[in-house]
Image (cartoon, rainbow, N blue to C red; front, side, top):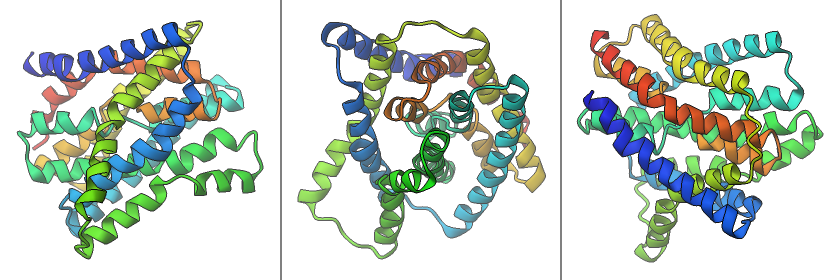
Length: 307
């Protein structure tokens, strides 16, 4: 009950307030959602990723283990989603939207505070979550961009679009500067902090603007199927991979918790930026965030059985 209340008060209600503000602003002023999505992709998201990686203390040993886990987990999750897609016989656009709604999950503004709560701010488990966050930021800007463009653009055009994503350059730059102990002048680091701090609010308001402009022709079957694959099948597969590699203790618990969170806002930003099923993407994010109150609380309860 403690975790249920905390998730509700610390994650779902604040997220819902910002989404509601975005919807109200859209109704009142008819905001340009394309401009908002570009701000998220090209400014706010790269800034927060650089800041978190530059300030983190991640060992190479932990990095290797977590990346190995993440690779196997994503392969299994992708295989499960692909099976569902083939059975459902979705259109090309809907195929990529469904994949993105399951494969991309909220590993930053939802999972990091959740990790700090469950593990009492343990630096070790937090470093694990930061690595997952890094990969969950890289994938939407590479595979995610490819998936929503492959069925309508030539490969060269899609690759040019991927190459224009700042995050793919920010990640190695942050690691290199941290590894070489390169200091950032305060006049430069101050605006980075300002921009990074604006990411969560801007991304959530963007989701609210998209929800506020929708006709709300809700496809319950597809949205609930996406939520089930993300919130139920996701942590189940995570637990399976933990057993496969023989991870135990806080590492195993942090890894399972990391893949139990709701669908990422990046799936909405991709859908809006590249006009690929934005209504489904927005509904999947909103519904999974609400349902995660119950599913994540249950996963936290089960963590005690991972020795």
